[in-house]
Length: 242
View 1 (cartoon, rainbow, N blue to C red):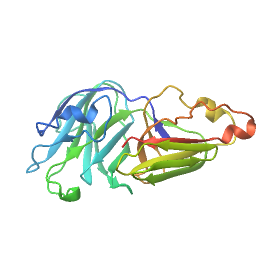
View 2 (tube, one colour):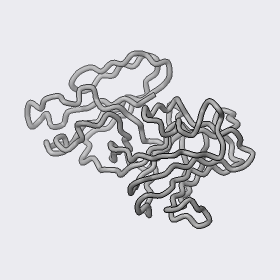
View 3 (cartoon, helix red, strand yellow):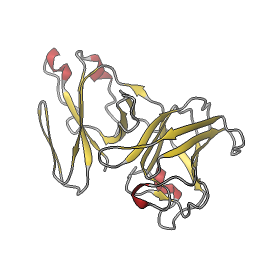
View 4 (spheres, helix red, strand yellow):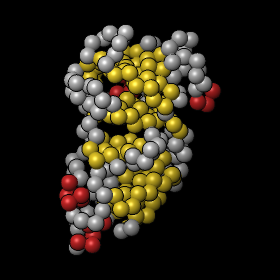
């Protein structure tokens, strides 16, 4: 399992065009609200969203999109005849009908430009007429050691969830989201090494399905005390940001 918990900042978003109420900046806004997307103004020709990157990145997460295929491109300069990175990607819809994908990229060597290029002509979800992106998140992934149990559950309207060591409850939100139970390994080190300060992260189950990635809040009971060596396998509950 992989985790993005320190997002690399991206700047100066530009696009092929944008709906006046849904500008390019929505895809990278600091609250990371997937429900506040960039929406293109037209899809007669290819559409694209571009940002400037400042550091080396090895992962890109696209969330709450409505298109099945795209190209992720990166170049040190704003010139696209032969970009350093040119990656064809397929986004998939999870069981909550949210189209997304976590994509590893290689070849990003430092500051430059990252472009999500959406070819015209493909069918969009739910009879959409123009592309949209809820989140464009970049960073460097870390691997979470041994995960003994992993359970992403879809909940809707009434969000209640029982962990191995107690209860977890959220107020109704009116639409589907996931609550993710993760039980860490069989020794204390993986628990000690998990980041304790992150406010938001992306979990990727790394099971060969790019839909198994979630923009999540950390567990409410993240700092639960470890009473014994047997408790090193505590279960933590994360909620998807709806």
